[in-house]
Length: 145
Ligand code: V0V
Ligand code: CO
Image (cartoon, rainbow, N blue to C red):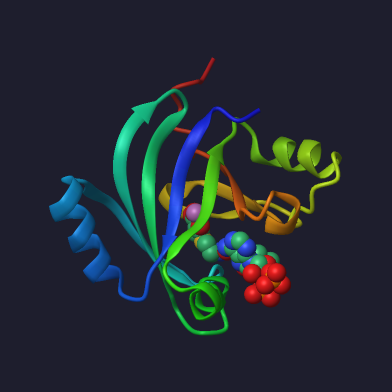
């Protein structure tokens, strides 16, 4: 079901400052920046590697306000790992399968994620304390018949 780790999401107060730290410390490169109003974040993806079905990344997340998932997380826990995202071939199917195994799926339907992806979240309380995201990479046409 899980093909790879798509990204690890890290909550921070200052996106630009954290991007500069990752660039100069690990020689990582930003491949996308996006503001996602629905998710309440301003985020950047830093490329780690390419793999089957898509790449893997560090996702840096700055909240758009205090009453957002990342804003609440920062107030409660401070900066650090916010979620782990797994690549799946079909997010709707993964939501159905995992939901049927007693894990709360936080989204009724797939949402818009970064880099054109489709995403859904699983409740951290059902996932050993780890907020978990499912990611379906955009259809690039590579797999066309
Ligand atoms: C909250 N909790 C967490 C957590 N956030 N535990 C582990 N990891 C996290 N990130 C715990 C929190 O400590 C509480 O436990 C409990 O869950 C309830 O938290 P809360 O602060 O009262 O907040 P809620 O219940 O209002 O919301 C928590 C959930 C919410 C997880 C339901 O944050 C959510 O729906 N998240 C999914 C959307 C999201 O995170 N979007 C931002 C990333 P105690 O203290 O009661 O024990 S956007 C993204 O990744 C994008 C766009 C992308 O990849 O493309
Ligand atoms: Co994410």
